[in-house]
Length: 170
Length: 439
Image 1: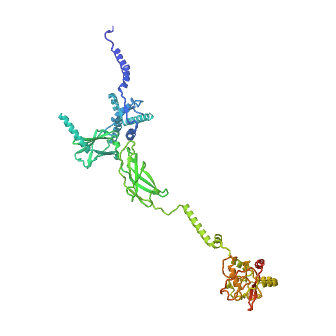
Image 2 (image 1 turned 90 degrees about the horizontal axis):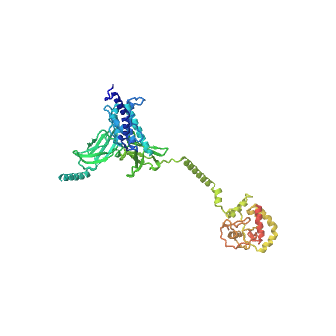
């Protein structure tokens, strides 16, 4: 005869798993817009980007191509975040923060300075107040290869062009 | 209370010092490779900057602030760490204490480097001067677009600079806008084109000197050809005018009035060459001249005429045909019918030694019908001879002639006397015409 008072451990685990799978993620998805902040983008006329940021991005691109041969298949870099509509500022904000992680001692001074300029310059033009995302930071730390940097820089460039195109249309 | 008072005093001290420590800065990007240069100096050169320091904070890469280096009275910083986006603050410190501060943007105080290698080349075919110069900013990444200013002047004209603004590094100066054979000097400077980077004029480039060519006598080939042709045409016209002046041009431009004496001479000259026809009495000096002593009365002349009319015609013809024959002349008479004589004027001639021909000549010369030639010399008609020695003698004023036939009748001296026959106007007219016909 089974013990009535004591539930089976297997039934309890199933209940907990069900909550985590079907309960929390939707909650996160609902709350994600709350956690993300709107960013005000300065320099939408593109002067800072064209005369300063783009020069550093191009120089970094040249340096990366001279140092490594990146494969054609795109590594999983910054897949979670994209330069979606009305989220360009946030994307740039996160991308700029990620760039800082590519600054290394063994890089040349000019390389590091260009990285810093793109990162800091982008952040200076954005007025964002997001919360810290420790999990994403950990994930980003794994991807520090130059090829990843190159892809990230291209995404930053694409997003800036999208912002400038949008401002011209308006 | 005391603390508050202290703060006010410090504020007053700072306000007073701010006026004295005003400064200016300018930046030069990529002046040494990828390094940038920021230079600051006090506006008042008399400021005691012994313990003063300059510091820049903000808009820097990987650092918060940077300290300036000092060279004499200038403060400068050479670094790659300018962000080039956003404003920075420059602090003047005295012993670590901030005296004055100034907010500025590095990209708005850019002073480009001076252009160099300015040259002027004369292009003969285009008649202009090509001005070229170089700038180090063409190789830079940030401050690439500049506005240039070219200034040129004639060396002798001080403070008379001509200015030209351009964005490229080539300029064309037209030769016709410059003085020929003159020395010019030219220089250029630059400024950021104010698209994103702004700032101040650079220093002037080194001056270049050039000389404009002289205006040679070389003319347009077409103009030269026309000039030569015109000259030769004018010369040819002058030569032709000189050559044909007498024969063709003058008779048309200044026609000569026909001289009746000359015309008559020509008419007489033509048939017989040996006929000496002349109105000049000196040409008959070697001829025997019979004086005309007197003129018979009209009645005698008429009667005589009737008798000798037939003989007279024949003798006239002979005489006219033969011209002046001198001693062979018939001594009886000679009929002369001067056409120039007046019809009504009586023929008057003094008797005696005075020759009728002279009187005839004198009166004929004074006859109003003698219009041609205007010559007042004695006129000699054919058959009329002047007495010897009478050409130069004075002759009293004779009365006007009567148109008629003058006959020469011999006197006691053997000289024929010319008598007036008192012929009619028609006979005189006929005689003259027959005179012409015989010629």
